[in-house]
Amino acid sequence: WQSQGPRRQFSPGLFIRPHYWSHEHRFEKKHVRRTLSQVGPGRREARDHDILRHFDIDPTWETSNPTLLAAFLTDMGKIRPRTQTRLSTKTQRRIGKAIRRAKMMGVIPLLSNPRLLPKKR
Image (cartoon, rainbow, N blue to C red; front, side):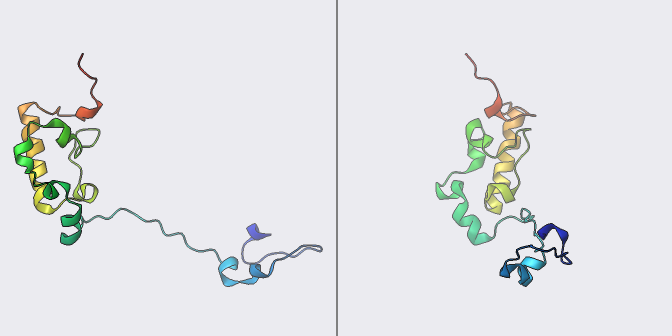
């Protein structure tokens, strides 16, 4: 009975609950799909979530630390956007610079995440 839409057919012996007559039940709600924000966090939010700023770590000095930089890379070796890292604008720029330097020095592979590489024996 509910799958027939707003204009439903009645049949003898059909039990109808009272809440079937409510507006919410008769007309389906439009499901709003939540998408990720296209813009990074605001200044206050980034200040609170920026873990590198919290521990006073300058990413440009951490170019030889692939485990730290790997947290800001995708599986294909691309730099994660600010919407995912939740860093401040300044720290995100420095992370990008550190990752590009590490790739040029050969510390991080160019096309994959160092966490996915097989361990050396």
